Image (cartoon, rainbow, N blue to C red; front, side, top):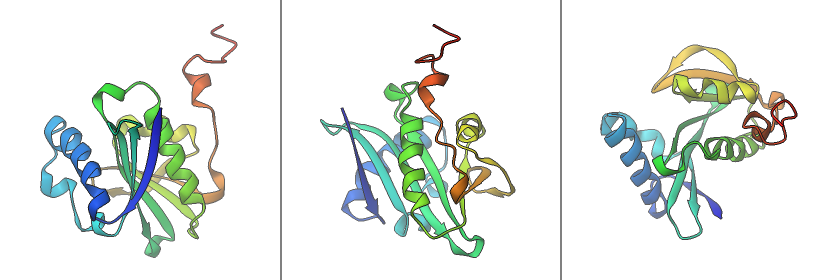
Length: 161
C-alpha cells in the first residue's frame, strides 16, 4: 500500500523529500547539491509518495510560473527499489490532477530526456526553451490525456493477451 502527502516549502514535511532527492539525484546521478536544492524549494509544493510503513517511494515538485501563465513540475524522482513499477506514472497523475485545479493555462514539465515518452502519453509536447535540469515539455491545462499506463505495460492490452 502507498500513501501520498503534499507539503509546501522547506518546513518539517520537506525532510523526507530532501532525503530521497539527495539519495537519487545527488548521490546516484551526480547532480551537485547546490543545483538540486534551490530557492524554489522554499515556495514549491512537494508531493511525497511512501509506503504505509513510511519508506520513500517517489517525490515531485510543483510551483507556479505566472510570467508564463503556467504551473511547472520538476524534480520527479523514484527510489531505486520502486522503479519499473509504475510509480513514475502515479506521481505524474497525482501532480497533473492538482495542476489542473490551478488557474494557469499551461502545465509544464522540466524532466530528463528519458521521461519524454511518459510525458507524451499524457499529451505533453516539446516546448520552446530549456529548463534547469532537463527538457521543457508542456500541455494545455485542458489538454491532458488520461491514458491508462496499464495498457502500455501489457495489462488489459488485447494484442498481448
